[in-house]
Length: 144
Image 1 (cartoon, rainbow, N blue to C red):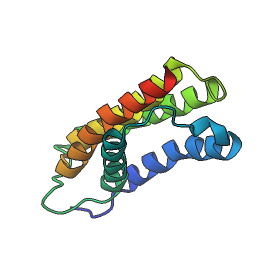
Image 2 (cartoon, rainbow, N blue to C red; image 1 turned 30 degrees about the vertical axis):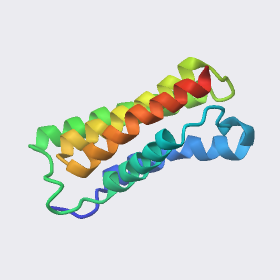
Image 3 (tube, rainbow, N blue to C red; image 1 turned 180 degrees about the vertical axis):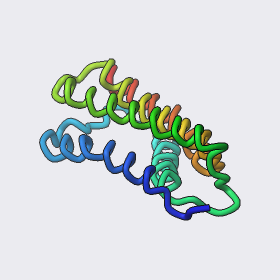
Image 4 (cartoon, one colour; image 1 turned 135 degrees about the horizontal axis):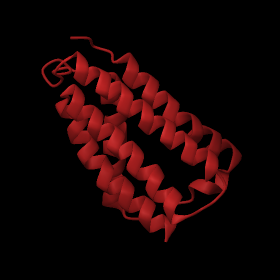
């Protein structure tokens, strides 16, 4: 078993690029208009767990890919999700819409959950289960 998942690191780094650019160019764009302390806390725990466990494989909680084919599927699906995520950022960069909010919250949620399932990472799956519904809810409420 490998301790560091370099592909997970690449996927996380690439999805962070448009977020960093947006934060620099549109400082008012990350305004949180809906606030729910518990949901926000769950989202942050899930977010940092997803980022961390996409990259770090903790022995005993990560069991690797079922087969070489499963690993190839992991790479193909995650690459497609990351490309789609970046494409939506490019197309909708300055457009606040429900579509943008939902797409940019659902795609990383699917990416993290799919990655956890494919790599058989218990901690990544648990983090994604915390992150996905809370992130999608916050994005939805802020887009209303």
